[in-house]
Image (cartoon, rainbow, N blue to C red):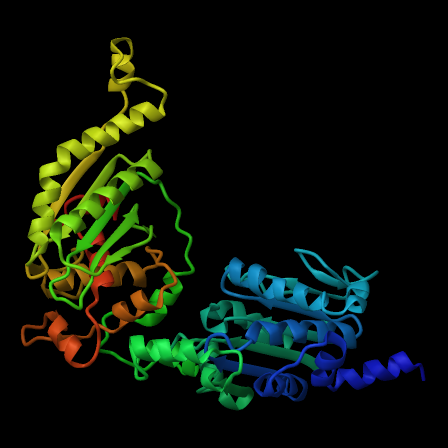
Length: 487
């Protein structure tokens, strides 16, 4: 027998040795267990915390399967193009470079990885999970499905996989943070667990996860939080029917790319009332795209007003096509001072923004000959809006089955609706996710929903949701003004 054939036969059943000898990597104990499970079981499902080396294992699996099977097909998918191409696909390229001999055999391109001379028959391909047909049409005696961040992949993308798992060498490896309490990935660790080699990797047990990361999560959110459970412990979130906003909605919102007109900007300003709280400024574009919030850890209203003016002018310059801007200020407590300061400056701010836009068009507002052209440059429709968290309640939209007891519930209810319906993009931010998903509600005797007060949140060790409140203000319109046009 050809020594090369003997080596291939050996490595076909020894993925750990292949990774060590051929790829020249050193998997840790948990990564070894995953590779052995991939060898021994047709379907392996791994839930884990953040940063345990999932992408490396998936990349090793791709290379191992390509090098030890004749004419294999390896479809790979993930919830987003970034996760698939910038993370997983780039990870495969990195490990191929680790051994020059591998690069002689396997050709890496942006569209596929294939065995030299067999581009159409012996390959791995990336397919984003936004396409329902992403995993259809792959028929081969040797097939390996790689599903990254599986908790975020829609069930309809998984359906073709089970139909293809009929061959003797058909395998599935799905891995991810367990963010959702429903779906294909959740079922693989619960109701349908017997069909899988279901594995769990706690980030605290991985050498790849820094102790500081774990301690920071514990310090910021606590070990009983869903942030800790998902990001560190690799556990599914707690079933919490009394949380107004589900963490899975926040995770999904961070993966969205909304279509934008760039015509309107809303800024919510939540002014700190207590020494350990923060003042937050949260801007939204078209009530769909988060533009990056700002936090300030002091309560001087003049300074918060100044930061707001800076943000208004910066966003007006960054989005010159925006014709409408609404700045919503929480006027309970210290916020009334910020509102007054901004309201007094409104006309001057409008004029300065108009002057800047005129100059950017190459015009001189002081030149009488260009007067008409300057007048054709529209002034920003800027309003400073007084808001109150303790105001009257009601329904977010007419016809809603849920009514809130006060305006706090209305504001948060609108955030809930936008997230649930997929109308809002959030930054991938643990602090914001925690604030949104940790606020509870009760049903009052009149049937209306009442949000948990900040004082009650602090008693159970949850910090004030300053950023989330600012987001709620940005989405909110008192008396539903402008809502039909912009929401």
